[in-house]
Image (cartoon, rainbow, N blue to C red; front, side, top):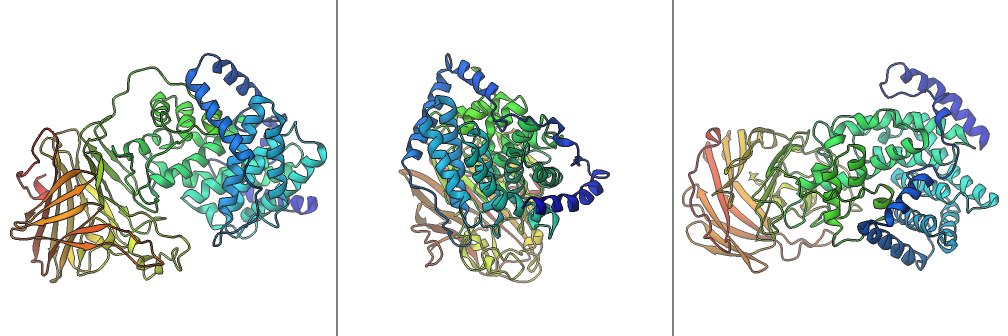
Length: 620
């Protein structure tokens, strides 16, 4: 095994020296370990930082509650069955993640209390996974996360483990994590090494954490993995530019950013530097993205493969971002979430106390530039009944993407009226075939006809479609965005534009679509909702949900009426039980056709907005 690793290192030196001269983030494999902290623990939280936290604990009531949460979590982990090598579909990922969670909770509990029961249970888990036949490198996320878990466990429990046990754990980490990792970089380069998306951060950071954990005794792995990971990570970190949006949506933002925090934190604590990675554009402001992309209901602007009704939960990486970029607003936002949620171990690793300052002003409107731009508007912060609407552009073939350019979602009166159904079962046949005629686009939840977008000629949007924001207006009583959807519908139109605006002094939402048809086709305007729908003559519908009401009105074309259809599906797809589609169907659109729909919540102390001045989009 040692010979194989040295052989890999020799191969790697040539590759590393090649990019050393040209790559901005290249590091010298021969020298970068000169700054390695040879002591343990050296990953994420050293003993000095733990000592500081314990002193802070004496007077910080918030910290006391968080520590209690994590110790209670560790106590539960003590009672759980031992980990087993069990695949779900092609993945061992759930086992890797459980192992990771246990290493942080049990490891922290051991370091905080000194109670050996926690260390002993963590050791048993480590020995179990290191005895696995493999960590499923065919789905390399599993290997990356397990390398992280075992690296942290080995490092944090180092002084508890006897020499024989250390060698057993280290041998498992090398066999199942480090050697496959080195192969992924130096033999047939793994696809994720050049990816712009979450696999990049997870695999690179997981591997470098494992390599740094054993670097003082088995440095050949770190000399291969760390330089390659530092070279690869900027490809994904560049996706945060210019202002922090994550193209795979807010759900995957957390996964990608958590692993960004793990990787950069480990580099800094083990080597004293992250080699400039934290200075990449967009990272310093990305913590604002999940805050703005969360509606008053707590639900995300739920695009890409986010889970159904995905909502913002605890995100310890906001503490890391607050620390790294000296932005207490991010930490305060996380403390607000933790008022009724349990803290996680990483909240303690990267702990930032509440600032004690009054809430900092956040803009009501925010336009995030990106390859997948979003615009979000709301009537107020800190009001669970506030009006909120979010709109997305981008490109349909983005990783985890759906055929949903121009999709909007809407909250008001404490409920979500216009919704996204979320992801399908990842194990369905062909789910990851996103080519032009790929099986992915046959599943209802991923198709245009399940989203809040137009349908032309009964067809989904073009898989190759791209949509940019051509005009925005923020900070007024009529904030808006105009999206150019032309390439998504180019079979039928020479121009397709969508405008979404807050109107009536931010009390209602207007959605206006304009089409320049190149051939006759049916046009269907659609919105997916959990509400009960009562149709009324004159192009009106009353939506009812959780005791609240919303009035929908067709403003254009005159004489158009609403229809309702079910969004329910048969197995093996998810059932979407009770979900409906509110539709406006125009059997044959004219050359210049506009569909305008007003969505007006019935507010407690005011009548719903029933009429507005309807302007064409070029006058917005």
